[in-house]
Length: 215
Image (cartoon, rainbow, N blue to C red; front, side, top):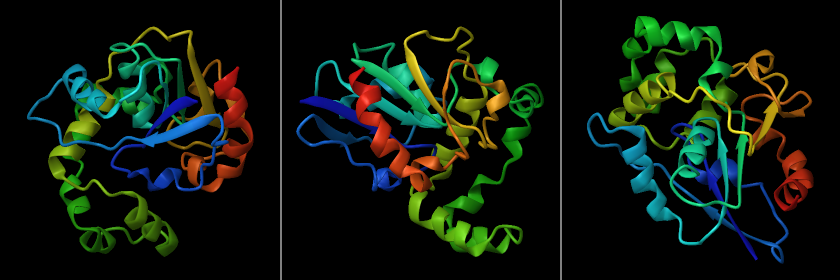
């Protein structure tokens, strides 16, 4: 039995994996969750605390978006069987230009993350977002602590991994607006996949993940 640990995207709960099914005779699925960071906590220290949620040796670790960065950092601290990232990046060279711009200008520091502490308040400021999308946010974005949100944004923007690890399996949608495919290299492409394809393209993952893990 292969233990497979899933790490959700920024601020998301493990509900994003609710439709992911792996053959139970081959795999045992476990779902990690975000913890609140300490003040100015370095990523390495945060990951060390997060690893306490892993109770198996040599697991497969799968991360979505920011969770993809996290599982790569996990693999630097413990031995893993395989590292798989979804809708994420293998190094900061795969970040879009706006993220590099934000790193230089500190633009992300003025994002009003306090709005996310109360989803009803957020609705008042999001006239351009369709109601269905807001309902998705309410369902899947469970971590609304401002300390976490401010830390997560700054940690992503300032992630300093420059060299791409050769042993990371990268699955990415060709219509991802957060990490555009034109910046991504050495990847398994999901046609018409967006940044939330783990939710709305779950059948692709159910069909392909078992083989990808077992290869």
